[in-house]
Image: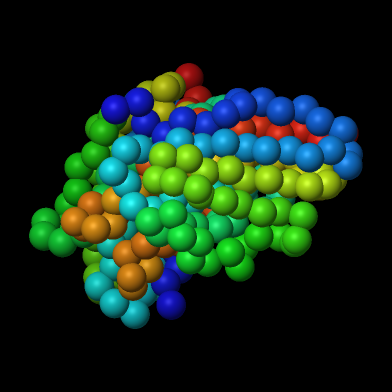
Length: 113
Length: 115
């Protein structure tokens, strides 16, 4: 069975500081992993995804994530936080059959000016 | 492409009334998903379709909820009768699994308030 755990339901960073949002996964098969962002009153938007190949994945808005099999992790990072990054972030893993996502509970990111 | 389209964006109704939410997936996608999001329960998968056929409705809370997908470009989620605890944001998402892209594309959601 697949699942993801997001550590920290709320994260606050200062503008310009490093953003680190943690995600650990459980999967019985090589995982496909995703990060989504949800801005207030909007739907979820794909930030980046890992399927195969390079373990460091770059996404939109300067975000990137690294797949670490040994740590079963897929943490999301951004070198310098911007006020516009304030949002809810969801990590997700796909099912064996590729047709269903298992979402984490989300991390709310606050950026302090 | 216009993305996933949902209507209405906001719905306010009284307890006991029937509510119908609508979704138009991205053209060519073969999977459609309905989710519900609340502060208490987070993001919950209600039901999903493959090529217009319901595959898993185990997330549908009870018989008051029903979903249909009469064709590849339209789906509805109906609640009858509605209750205050159904108040939530309902999202529709679609994906293309055939071909291996997998990621789900979400609509803007319908905010349902039942008074």
